[in-house]
Length: 287
Image 1 (cartoon, rainbow, N blue to C red):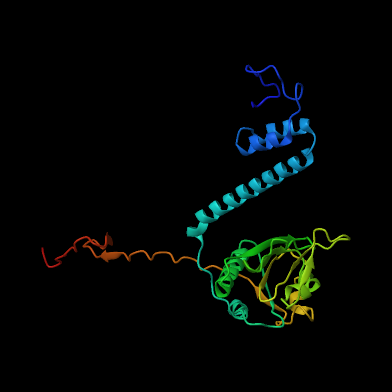
Image 2: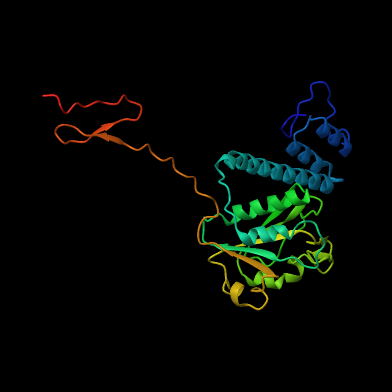
């Protein structure tokens, strides 16, 4: 079938939907065989009417999935191109201590790592480096990253204990966010239900037991002083704090230029000799 509503049938004078009814499964088979484009399929399915809602939902779900794949492919491609530009991270004692407590051993609670600093210091890149190291320790392939900002909700429906070594809460807008969600974020061996609602239709279960939680804060976040004053937040068994004053990555050392070699001359002027050129021999005794 063509890409327009009206198709010419030179071999028949029995037009569909007029001379005979069209079955929806005929359209399904044509779509699966690649003989119908998706938008044409939906137009014809709407004319069939019966079963259209399900066919529309299936097509929209496929389009969303394809959209998500394109986004992921673009991000993966850009990330791959930037790998060569990533500089090695500095060593921080608090980071090493945090990683050491994620060795797979059972613990009642684990601290949250809070990274605070100004813009462009590498907070998120350090958080990614930490989660990658922990994923290696736990023999897991990846981690989950969530942009929080001013939201009070954490969308953890995609968190998979079989795949993720932990979660990065990026750009948290309020330091008290950690305290308000402390029973969830400290990794107690308990099951938590997310996306609660009156009907719990879209609820899911998760747990950060034996998993890492790293939160990043910009200097514009609210209540940052609470990380050093609040009775719960300042307790380093609850929140380990890394306050950045400088970039987290090691700056590449610039090549040291070769020292210039100078030779004296009869008239007192200093002349430059390039490294590798033959040395000049000056005979001051000659008349």
